Image (cartoon, rainbow, N blue to C red; front, side, top):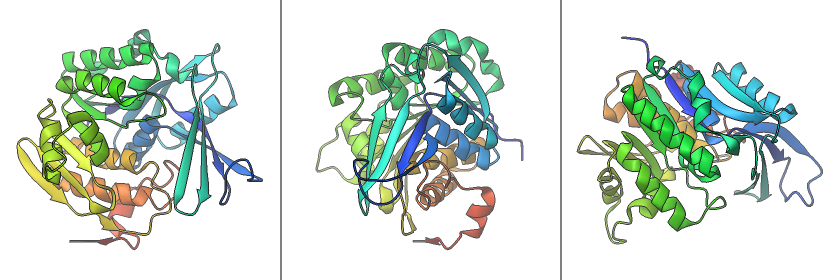
Length: 318
């Protein structure tokens, strides 16, 4: 089998403060310092599965920026970081006010990551990659970040790359109408799209009475040849090259579901890069998503191939 295609991803990775224990930050006595961000999480997931991957982004000239770059490099990600002395690295707060509930707060307005520009892409050789993965988070950060995504897609398509897009809607960053317009603008130039069932409904707006399979079909009708809709503990549905697919979820007791979608995308793209057929891509993706839910960190639970082979107590529901 040939070596997997190199993947390029770009966006904002941030510092993360994760509250220790149950409760809000107004009462918690301590927190753990960590890092997170959708594109960086996916990059780690790919690297752990043996896929060569590059992450491009901006960080501040500060300790959190150095921590972000160090964490990604330690996981085998090729990091192309632009240090921005005029803006800080973004920050995310993550707490568990009550068991089973996770609250995320962002401090990223005016952050270094939001100041990504099309000129930052000049340091990339697009011919060296086979897939580019982007998310709706970067579209939401700023006008310049949004322009960078579109320029990256233009350059990727000119070089024959597969374009992968995870909707990753963040309601705290923009309203539904602006977000939907931006997603619809991009989707005709995308080959692969990942969305939760709620995100698929936001983007494609099929009839509320439509069966689940219609979510993937409607999403694919907007342009992507591979439309994948994640359903949490119900698995995933997909419309891939005109064929419908359904896969059940792995039965687990989740610790934290944040980052599961990023891990799912990493698993799918890793299997896609290795040339596996559609059902195998979905099987790997759902298992990667399950593993991510077994750790409180955003990316620390990303699976390695040995994890997928051994199962680590995960029972596949068939």
